[in-house]
Amino acid sequence: MSDFAWIGVQSSMLKRLAYHGESLTLYAEFPSGAVYAYYDVLPEDVAEVLAADPEQGESVGKAFNRHIKQKGYPYDRLTEDEADLLHQILGSTKATHEEAEDDIGAG
Image 1 (cartoon, rainbow, N blue to C red):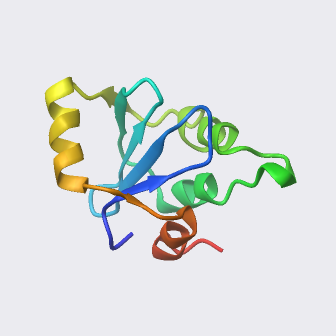
Image 2: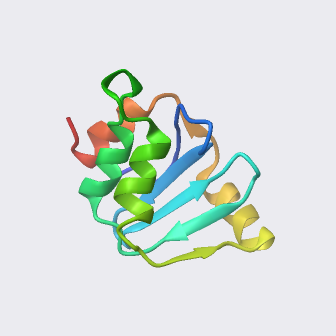
C-alpha cells in the first residue's frame, strides 16, 4: 500500500485499519479505542480482510479473525502514547476501503 492511512471498515468488531507495506505492519483500532500492531502481515492477507463481503457470507470481523488472528501473526497492544502518536501520523480515515484494496492490489 503506497498511502499509509487509516482505512474505515464496516464492522462491529473493528473501527479501522492501517497497513504499512514497507514494514508489513497492520494496525487495527477496535471500537474500545485499543490499537494493536500485527507484524510481518502479508499484503494478500490484508487484501482478503478488506475484500470481505457480508453479502457473500464473510464479515470484516470474520475475515480479520481468519486471515490475521488465526494465522498467528505476532502482535502488541500499543500504549496510549504510542496510539496517540500513530493517530497524529496517520490523520484521518480514507473514505472507503475500496481505495485501500486498489492500493494493496486486491480485486
